Length: 264
Image 1 (cartoon, one colour):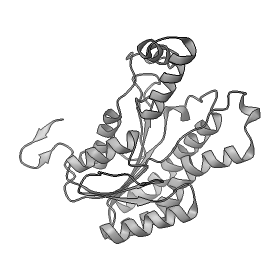
Image 2 (image 1 turned 30 degrees about the vertical axis):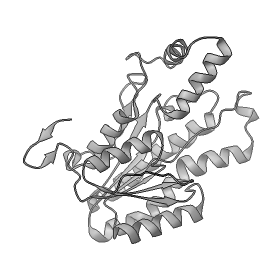
Image 3 (image 1 turned 90 degrees about the vertical axis):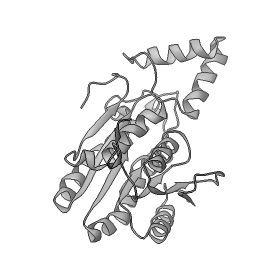
Image 4 (image 1 turned 135 degrees about the horizontal axis):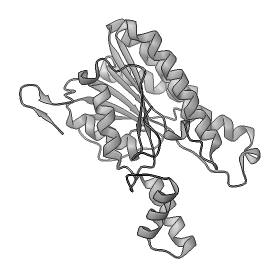
């Protein structure tokens, strides 16, 4: 990370008030830790209690896949922070259906849309008015490269992330004249606990060690770099987009996947 000795780090976020959904595990946790290092005051949401969070982080327990959960996060965040400068809609996830797209029931489609798309729409609707009132703000939507390359066993997840990108571009266009920047980050395969679980499963089912299983998974993802991303690498991009260094970046979809997709 480049240092700026006069103003702090390159992506100096000292004093910024930040909300991160799904901010206690995986990519969300890495984003939270990076923002704390940058000097931000952070509110994270999660479905369950988490101990030993950094001093400048407050946890709000809520399920943002529901309207009530979003309302709780927005209300508590505004009470705790007194306003929001940066909103990171990171909460998401997917459930595979090995039998194919026609086997996915309605409730599974609705669940995927609720957590991977509507959670962001609803929280933006709850938080952005306060940004408009203060005359500035940043919204970052954490999507997925699956938005451009559907995952065969999780097409409902891919569709939800594609919807998020379309929505984010429209929101960016509308809010840019009002000094609010909206951008999206599209991670590819990233070494989170969820991916580690997949690797462990592959290893057990194929009688391989975890290294061989990892190489198999990376090969299957067609990653030219030859490895998955670390959560901190996604967090680096998010920190840049949140900072004043990205003041002219609006409506972008930044792919972070080791070259698995062409940059968009």
